[in-house]
Length: 531
Image (cartoon, rainbow, N blue to C red):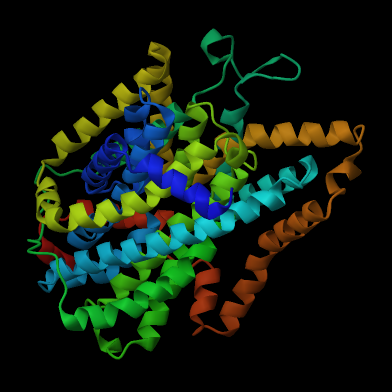
C-alpha cells in the first residue's frame, strides 16, 4: 500500500471518537503542565509519561501526540507572559514576546505563536510523511558498522553543539553512558556497576531516569530560587490578531518552517540555531526593524514556527532510525521502549497501524491545539497565579507517583531521588542534561552494534570502516570536533557576521536558558524586567 493509503488508514484509526477524546485530553494535559513556569515540552512529556502506561499502545501514543504539541504551546505561553523560557529554543520567543506583552499586546503575541505553531507543525508533519519512508528504505540497506557510526555521530554532534563548553557537554555524555552500562551484560552475563544490588541487574528504567533528571532536577533547581510571592502575570485578553498582524506574520511563519524542519532532522540540528537564524532573518527583512528589541511580532512568529517545525523534524530520525536528536525526542523514544516497541527501520514494517495512527494524530493534535487553546489562553494564564511552593510540591508529588508506577518498586524512588539530585547539580554547574539522556538511550544500542561489527570482521578494527556510510559519518564527526576552532577564527576576523556568532556558540543555550529562568523566577513584578 502506498504512503497516502497508509496515512488514510492512520486517520481512520486516530479519528475514532475514543481516540479523538484521548487526543483532546492529551492537548489539555500537555498545555496545563507546559504552561507552568520553567517547564518545557520535554519535562511536560516526562511528567505525563506514566499517565499512558495502562492504555493500549495506539491510544497511548495518540494521547502522547496531544501532550507533545500541548507542551510545546505551553512553553510559548510562559515565555511570552513571564519571560520564563522552559527550554533554550524558546529564549528568542521570550525576547520579543514578553516585550509585546508588557506593551499590552500579549493576546497578539500568543495568537501569532499558536497559529505559527499550527502552520509549522502541519507542514513539518507533512514533510515527515514524505521523507520518513524514504529514510527507512535507505536505512534497511545499512549494516552494523553504519549504524554504529550514525549513533556515534548523533552522540558527538548533539553533545558538541550544546552550550559554550564542550568539556561539560562530553562530561554529561559520559555520565549518561555510564548509567546505560548498569545491569547485566546481555552477551557475557556479567554484572556491571550493580555494586551487589540485585535491583540493578536489569538496569535503570529510562522513564525513571528521564523523570528524575527533567522533572525532579528542574523542580529542585527552581525551588532553590523561589520567593514566597506569587508570579505577577500580564492579562491576556482575547488572543486574536488584526489585519496588520496577519500581514506581518504569515511570511515569517513560512520562513521559520523552512529553517526549522531541516535542522530538526539533522543529528546535530536542534531548534536553537534555526530559531536564532529565523530571528535575524526577520530583523533584516522587516519593514519595521526599529521595533526589534521592543516587541516586534515578526520576532515571535518566525522563531516559534522554526521551533515547532524543528520539533516535527526531530521525529523523522527518531521514528525511522531510532535516533533522538533533542530532549523531547529522547523522552518520546523512552515511551516507545516502555511499550516494548523499538523505533528504527523495521518499525514501519512491524507496527504500521501504530506508526501511521501516530502520524495522523500529529495532524489532529495540532489542529485541536489551535481550536482548544486560543479560546482558553486567559484560563491558562490564571494557572500561573498558583503559589510556587504549592506548584512545585505538586510537580514533585506527581513525578514521584509516576516513577513508582513504572515497576511498583520502592527502590525506584531511591533512584529517583539520587538522579534528581544529580539533575540539580548538573544545572548548578552548567552541565546540559540532554547528552546524559541520549547517552543512556543510545549507549547500550551503540555497544550492541559495535559488538556485531567486530563479530562480523572477526575482531578486526578495519571492519568498523567497511561501509561507505560509516566512513562518511566518521569524517563528519572529525569535522564537527575541529570545526569550532576554524569558526572561532572566522568569527574573530568577521565580528559582524551573525552566522559566525551562531556557529561559534553565541546563541541561547541550555545554560543561558537556566540563567534566564532563574532571573525571571526571582522577579516580583513585571516592571522589574526593565531594571
